[in-house]
Length: 374
Image 1 (tube, rainbow, N blue to C red):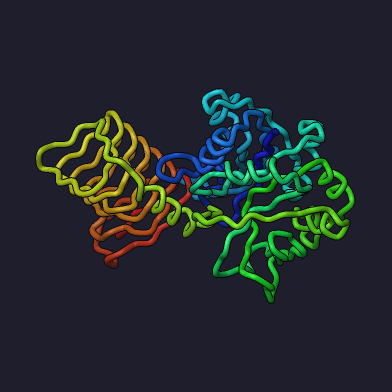
Image 2: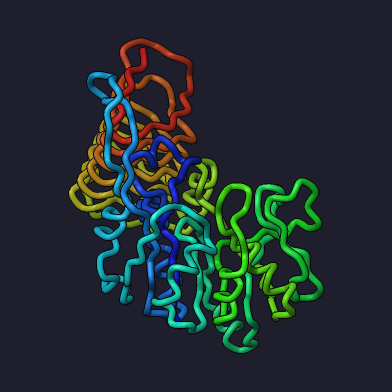
């Protein structure tokens, strides 16, 4: 069995972070979301993986020095190739499949047919996080041999997702983002198919948003009398396409963190709970309250880092407080008088303060931004 991992898309709900970075590489607990999926595939015994990537695109964005609009080339494909390589670091053999535009999940299946060679396969959306992995789901598909098997989860807002109606474990109807959902079972971004799905994606037409929808392809299988099974997951699942979901996934992953100190912590620093500190990091006169993770080569001075925070490599925190936040590589937060919380801060960002501001700041900052709080 092979896997098809979707790592295209534009990540509009995570802008401005995704103006310059692939959404699948935004880190949770200092590890890119995509890596969790690749590890889950390997744990399920799948080693042949095709990754669908998007073509580079041009876009206008403000220059952080002049403020003028400039044209930049956003090449998330190159970023993903650089991060994953040939897959050997994960015990995988990776092949890259280029999708010329985000034309839908079913379109990705359609263009990947030569790679998949009409064999059964797992399709995994690269920005999804499933805590307990997919091994039981894959074994069930191999044992029961349906034409398709979908992963479902109970959600509070089913109208935001594709929704399934079931008879037992058999799927009888799917609806994409319904106004009046018939159930609270949402499609999770993991699917298994046999070769009949290729006939389905060839038969459907683009939706109103101009995409070939995988829900339409699965509905085509159901209407054609094919056997479509479901598996309702018991553990947690997150589609990390929104800041709130990234922070929640970060919180859940960090809850199981073990203490590991590889950097330098001075005698005036107080640590509580589970704290992981990477090599080359120095902590001086600070308070660390876990669970939290700090990457390599960071500098934390006269600061408070609170629970459920992920501080990436090369970050500098000086005279500041932060908690329940994700800070990406090489950013600096200096002399901010009030606590930063529930925030996602991009790479190479500078957050500095001159005068007083309100007691808490909620931030979502793109890469290479600079914010002065006065």
